[in-house]
Length: 380
Image 1: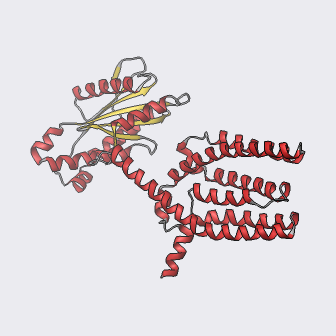
Image 2: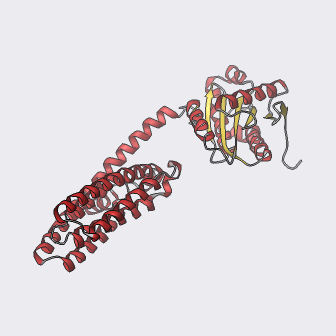
Image 3: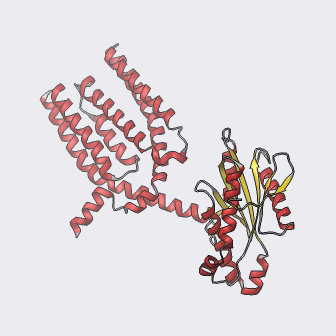
């Protein structure tokens, strides 16, 4: 059992694979930041090393070429990590490509160009990569192990026997160190990630409905509108009809159950890319960052209303004999407004009209600036 635990620690950092997969996007962001910092630091270090070499040895075309190559790698890496954090989960290959290139650069530096010196830069890189990148340890072991074998071969071919033996000893020592250091750093980094995620969850998520607070939705809307050159967006304002009736008739526990039921219905009815929040009380807000046409909005709004209207589902989930209903106001960017406040104002205005025209319906802000009611059943 102890051997199993040791293996789990060394190769997986004692991190549950499910937790790792859930937090992969967070580790991606962490790795992107690390690549960006390392690219700057490595460019500076190679530049300083080049100056020192030139002062002591004069102009050497091989070394200058290596400096130029390393500088280009740093610049490319620095520019590449401008990839939006929303896509960070796809950027782990970038981390390994960057690491592999840096490893090759240090092998050339310590094994070919610096054949009269020991592989100090290379061994330092193997430790740095283990400490700053967040990934399963056995992935990192494969990267470092491959690089170490290449370094040993390069050292054996290009250095004296004494330097080769010294390099071999250093690599063996640092390999053993990394074997225990990498899982330990993985545990520390994941503990930090999970702690920050818990704090962010408590700060951003409504405890009852498990939806975002309205401030999170506002921030998401404002951020998205700055990048919405190619897509229309839509903001939906949703309000439970006659919610006070449920609290007064069945009690506050039933009211809470209704709110959770409504929240789940909205989440189920909206596309995955939507940002959904509780605006306050019995009001909800949903932001759809990509809208192709009005029909898509009609289908989404009608789908939410149909889910809420499902009496059998409502009774099964809430244990409340009466089924609630929703009223929805929808504002489309840019015709209904070009900011969060303008979209909320337009959607609220449509919602008010829906309430005055019988409730349990939805309305969409007209592109001409007027408001119109639209209730469609799919297939009509």
